[in-house]
Length: 185
Image (spheres, rainbow, N blue to C red):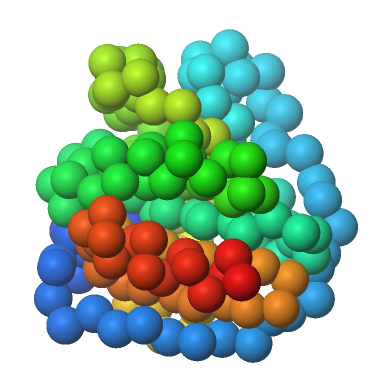
């Protein structure tokens, strides 16, 4: 419980700031073997989306296929995250046939999964893949996503097998489209 409260304080302190965020180019790392999400039967019955700890989730950050992967770290309580979701949904719909994959990684607290996350996804009719990252050891896993990530959301990783960029900021549709274009060439 103390770790969860610490995570919430850290996220609220540094997260959801549209501040001086920057683009960071990172070398592509080798992929790790795929693993299945947590199989706690109580968790699976309780929520509609896969729940991962970071060890289970990490392989999604290192796929070496012909797809451009867009991974968005967000939460239902983050206003800048909510503001940009329609742009990711539009990219998901328009670029599905161009091997572009959008994954929405919810960082909502477990108490919010049924009461907030599920109703939000249903009400907004989100079509992108939604998963939950439930790992309180954020000081361990945040730098594994990007060494330059300070923990704020929204945060977006765009990668392919030979290129990788990370953003700790929100996007407009045009900005997002501009960042994806080099991956499609």
